[in-house]
Image 1 (cartoon, rainbow, N blue to C red):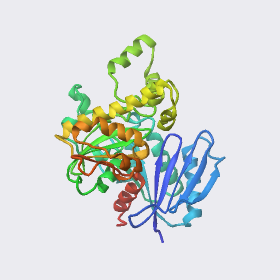
Image 2: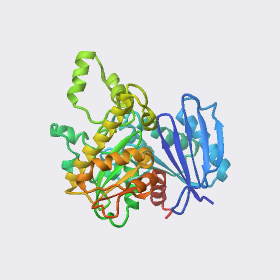
Image 3: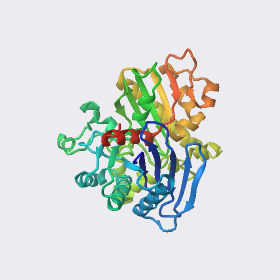
Image 4: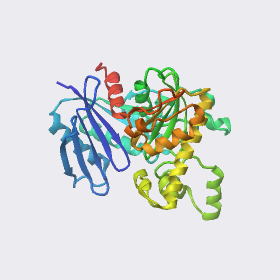
Length: 389
């Protein structure tokens, strides 16, 4: 009996995965293949957090397709042959036309390949496991779930850049990302703010904010690519385009050099002088550059929170999620203190606990920590698209 849904979330050097049942709930198993291209290894934990697989993958190398094949073998070991009903995938970019999850066909894959230039560091890795599974099991239903889809219903004016209209017609517009995370958080909002105006901060190595009204995306800090908006681990966030033109003129930088600069050499890593892209390392450091990197990270969150509140016409609640948002109480406190003018009154003990509501009972605008679960959201979509619910 096919009674499981497998979820894959492929990045540039890793594949995170989860195995879900046919009913909505926590994953039965979670794991990842990491260090693809360096020293590939797989670790899997069960629902209780017990490690059930921990092994090196010498035959994988830097090949995401080989990693996907290795993953298939481990899944068979864990739940048995023929027990997977469908596979759901996180795909970063759905472009203009994919505003909802879709069952993968060869025509869909061809469409998504055309979007690689819009997400060159993510899209190819998202699509590699889809092709690998299709080659191994062409009968296996696969579903693509898009990080851009949650934002596709924003007003046209929110999606537009101040460029000639012909570029908008060609797809040059603000798409927004982290949509699967935001969609999951929208499903978990506390009743007192669920129908209101909420800023959600997906704060991790990749970081963004989304303004929601009545659980729907109104505006997001990310735009045409996942490099716009906040300062991130290695991404610069929003930068004056004139800076890039200047660097082309004065440094002789071409498109690939600029790509490396804004995606991999900037953000917390670059501002800290190369110290680290990891907030934990920066928090533990006494180096002035580390403190400046943290201050800029917080400043951009605060500034964009005000922008989103303006776009929504007010603010009723705030949510912190993802790696930094869920685990870094100092960053949460600094953001909330700087947003006091919006009506946020943080509670030190609640914030230190890092769960649920982290503002005082009398705070006009409440703030919460809510763990995200993109894989669970993908499992929900996959079951619905395939008709398993």
